[in-house]
Length: 611
Image (cartoon, rainbow, N blue to C red; front, side, top):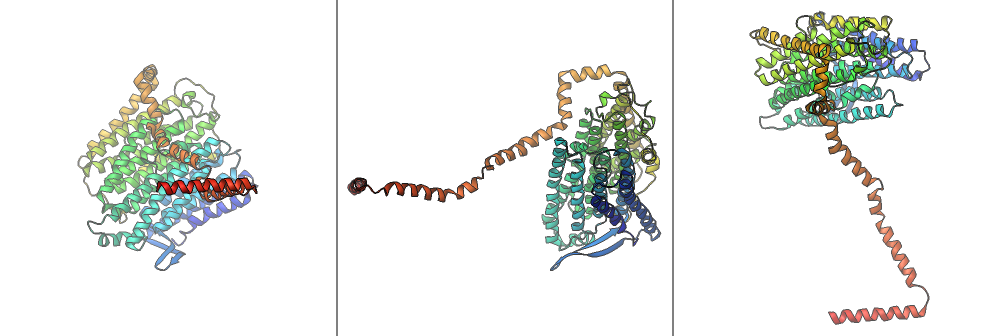
């Protein structure tokens, strides 16, 4: 496990080499460095994982150097490996490697080929820092690193101003959450004198009395940071617009890794949240609300990537729901399986987009199952896992653990929200599949070729089935384990499975056989209203534009001539005017002086008489 630091160093070296090449390398060489560095990091992770289990899953720390030391404030660059961080590290490097391999095919011929891999390598390095950090300050470094890379990759096609706006939107909104996280750092260090995760959890019970509100504020700020990074209510609006970047970016950052950082943060600091049950319950409520609202928004989208983007919001909502009901292991289990099937769906959508000549509107596709059969199978398996089709998909097992955790911990309302979300998920997922791959062929598509296209899809397809559910994250001793029995679990599995199947059957009935019914409902007055409302993601962008953007632009308009500078110029203007007045009075004419003296005398006499 002494090689743990290489999981950061290897992609960081790849970034440096690609950055200093300044785009002069061939595409083959750039792909070799970009994909190879992450592949080597994945191999190191495999080696470290084997060593971790061979040593009995003992906690391993690797102190590299002291980052900063001012008085008692001492922050070291120290890496920590336990079951939770190993699970996240495996997802980041393993799934990240497959996405990099696919991207080497997808990005061929694009301007900035080596620049793309430089950004993604830096992202992987930053994400590994985030998950291996043993203290909140070092995690914050990785946290900001992935935020920077997200901005760079969302705006990768920088010649289009709309892409720049999407990147700026993502950067600003996630920075709001990052400010909350910074507040949490200040509070926790001020109260506990340390930012080390284990030390904070050990010191917190003795330090925070029952009536001490500072821990409540600290966990609220941690939640704010998690909400911003994981695109949950009310900071969720950036994720759909983030689809402006290349499709592998969506798979890498906005499905498999970065958006799960908020889930990881709460799981890592779970000991603090257990001491603030009201905040922990709020985590579950936010997750439940997000998964339902995002599900309705996905139901009316026409862009294939935006459908998947809203499904990502919804699935992260399931993870927040699990955290809120203390089903910690279920949250991380679903984080892992979601990385498999959502990466599969995003990469498959990228293959569809290239096959259809960069067309993303699902209603301009149709009948593609014959021309791109492999991608069709990938969508079926990935969509079935997303919809949690019973027994055969990984998503069924992880989502069922979340629902059962909510039930046995007494959160029946959150469990019902999860079932509603499951129905919506199966409905919008197979709506997309039936429209794109069935019906009349509207566009000529050409299938992708090559091992870099086929291999990542096939591997992710395999892990999206029940095979992926056989992988159990090693969380014993890291997170509290669920201690509920099996009573009622079978009934809930049947109910959740039935909900998924019913959703698929209704989708087939509506979009394979009764499209006229869908059209008539959509054209009705209520249908137009709800379709427009949901298509605009419940109007959050409009609301934020009125509350924040427009007032900001108004203030900027008022300040564009720098009123403070004008205010500071008033003494100079008064002096200038006084000078002009004195110049007029000192004109050298005797009659002017006599007249002014006479007027002055009259004024003085008048004042004396009035007084």
